[in-house]
Length: 293
Length: 188
Image 1 (spheres, rainbow over the protein chains, first blue to last red):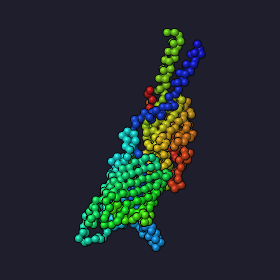
Image 2: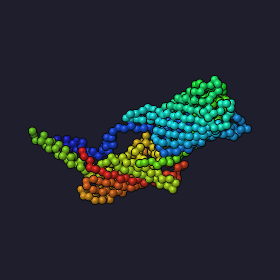
Image 3: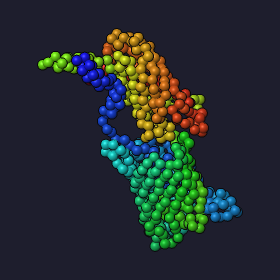
Image 4: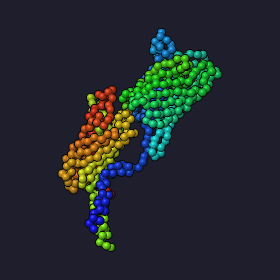
């Protein structure tokens, strides 16, 4: 009788082990499943030329210096392009998690540009998940250089251009993000026979090589190019290197100009001819507005 | 009912009664506060997590904490992003956990209001690596609730988190951790 009682008792005691061993996990897992946003798709708010799905956090001011040398095939006399340089200085600011604005000025055509970028959907997992991020970007460009062309055409509105883009991107894994960017560029004044509205499809992405380095590719397929000059699709490839508050984007490109109006409509350089330029973008983020906890 | 069955019933009754009594000896919270600080002359890194879970078993002195890494908030948004992406790799290791016990639990009278100094020892698991940690702390019993507080230091390198040489002077390998939790009795 004693043995018969002892064994089951033992089993009961064994079963009634302290619940504490599993409690902390069950306690936390009891919390309702929530939406988890996917972050850090790109190291920077530009893939190389193109706006990326990455938004600036609120209160962050991003100072961007874009520097591009001349064509490598311009020979030793031009020190393989290092003697020439085009620059764009810009400031981007995060107003809210989903709204970024920016202004800039490039020395190519002394062109001012400004843009608004609004995120409609952020990629997320969990409740209400979304497989992609969807961002709307639009901007205006203004050539401020001395007017070159028929004097009768000189007017403020003729110096203006506009662009609109839909950025659709997805972070497939920790190491791979891809983005498609259908774009329309409108130029108020164009030579006769050239389209005022140019359509392009951007395709780009990044492959993360380490915690702080990624390999980026940025390409536009331009559909209805100008007839007055021979232009080609811009392609940039390079590396993003992140060091704390800075992101350096070292790249090679055939693109002319550093805003959407310029590099989509004016790229007369060809990779196949060696019209390649070395460039580097420096992005430095400052937290200017304190975060509330 | 034969005698054997009666004995079983008695045992079952005692067991369940016993378990019910045990329930009041557990305290828990889902809003524990864990902060950490890395102080250097160039830059300070500090973050706070206000949604840490904690369970304390008054009978055995067993203590458990768990916190989601993505729950740590920083003053600088970029710092938070880098913390998650580059250092703690929170997509791979989403939680930090501590499982241990109060060494001098017998010195604590949970029924009597007061402040009791304690020593806690256990395993801290961070970034997928576990390390034995011993820390001093304080237990404050008030009105049937338990306030836990503790401050201790950990070495970042102990948890396979590498600080690249480029930011070596901005991130201290010695990180101060402060735990503050107000625990309520766990009702079963």
